Length: 391
Ligand SMILES: Nc1ncnc2c1ncn2[C@@H]1O[C@H](COP(=O)(O)OP(=O)(O)OP(=O)(O)O)[C@@H](O)[C@H]1O
Image 1 (cartoon, protein in one colour):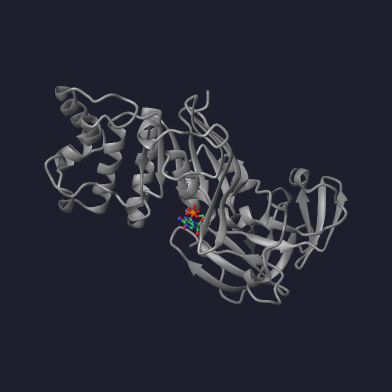
Image 2 (image 1 turned 120 degrees about the horizontal axis):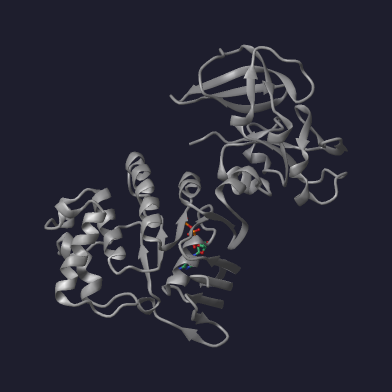
């Protein structure tokens, strides 16, 4: 049985006479012990979906089932309040109570019977609070007040306060976004470890692709209130079905295609840098080959090989190094192939500014995807390729 089953969820907001469709007939499931991220740009409906599952937002249609119990149904008029849905929620703002010590904050749900369990007995509360603080590496902070804690420690306390009543389902709304980059990375690892150890199911809202890639068993990419692609991190990164997902999930070169034709072992796409041989595996979602239509070739910057030797043709192009950015563990090269700019990454700084090089892409790293990015996302109007450089 799924921990969460959402069918046909819709939410419209009406404000100042205008209607916004925040969630549009959305389906999702979350299995026991699974970590699923809702990933998408600002305003795509992630938080509204999460809040509707939590019971904090009244949907306009659909059904929500949590652990086999219908907690919302527009048809049957069912609505179960948040505190009776047996779930925990962790927000971006830590929302720990400033007038209570860490131990009192964490014990609060047990004293008040929050979650699916009845109120805990007195002696039991202290034991469980001590245990969870130990687990979260916060035992030494038990007597402190939130004002005496760092941001990361406050977020740990907020998480401990939710975990203390052992929910089977935890909802997270960008819980790490107030932390600095280093701490965020550490907390990410800790959270995933904790989730795997305790076995709760997690639905996690983020617009941070790295967070989604590193935390998830499955990622649901959202746009305009709908899920446009669902899959494992590898599937989303390596086999995006359209340019929006490809661009959102990572740095990318996208070359608009003017002509597509079959060849042995794949398809040949004619683009601004010339012919690109693409692996056959990229074909199924495209339908009939023949009309290039609104399609692009996708090549990740890390899949391009930059060398001083090469033989133009067969997925090898002569290029000039236009710029480079040193990032410590990698170098980003901006390469010019005719009127097109490509981005390539390499582990070390081997090339120099202005150098003539050869850039190669094996057919199996070139995919044909649906769509084109808008012209204003191009490096400049006369360039065929669009690209995104890692933040
Ligand atoms: N209370 C509200 N009244 C009117 N419109 C709202 C309300 N809450 C959300 N919206 C609109 O619904 C859409 C979805 O909002 P939502 O907060 O779910 O997006 P999101 O993907 O979580 O964005 P973010 O990453 O910025 O938090 C947006 O267009 C937003 O402006």
